[in-house]
Length: 384
Image: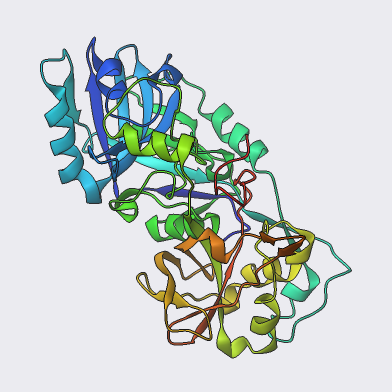
């Protein structure tokens, strides 16, 4: 699946229309991002809604479809909480909130995360199918696919026809579309068709958490700022204080991290991959890991909620929030201290990825996805 461009209709998403002269002002006061980034039709931003204590209620994409009219696409699992939140802060503003989920559907056109190219310098692993041993699955930049889908759907956005736009979280997530229920997104013929599980598997590989999975989390620990979902320059909004304090005065000690889940039954391969440092998936050192993730024959992953431990301890070091069984990956909240290099005097300690599930059935190999910027190993925040 990771080597195919894929079209998915996201049946788990709801669509809200926010319309009126105060629509932008209403959203500006309750969302983590800056609505100035949605100044014209087809402009889109990603953001989250927070409790007064700064915890995440839910996230969404906001796209302008007409002046003073916006569509929000969000997870149906948090509809009740978000609806209450929106109504609480609507007050006397000149804005109407209307559910459009029966009239519009949400689509994602996902670019291939990895591509097949010739190789000559990687060892062949006995645990991998012979076909995989002939190929190096290297990470590719998905921008041409993104631009192609956009060019095929270049009509004007409107409240009647919806909108097609780059996923505002980044090109790794491809193209997003909110279209009338009877319409379909136009994509090149080489796209495979997938379902919500396909989309979740894709997100698991990328380490992208959304919707109900964010459940009461802290925005920066949930990687919202890495996904372009937080503005630190806009004015006040509900729940801002904790996020701003963490960014300007605190440290980010935990984050959601993607993991390759390697069955312990893979033997020497599992042991070898467990020696890798915490690095980008396209690092030269991670060729064998990319090969493993490209092998659908070996793909499997533990269930959501499974605890991760170090082999010599029963103390949990993380819990799986998203499982991608078809990609052999998962995403878990983990302390960065277990992953990032630490300095002790004149020496630098580089941790190895010695993590397993509590039952020992899987080795968990954390890696940095391509869309991550560089992080400060001391603070856990983006290097500016």
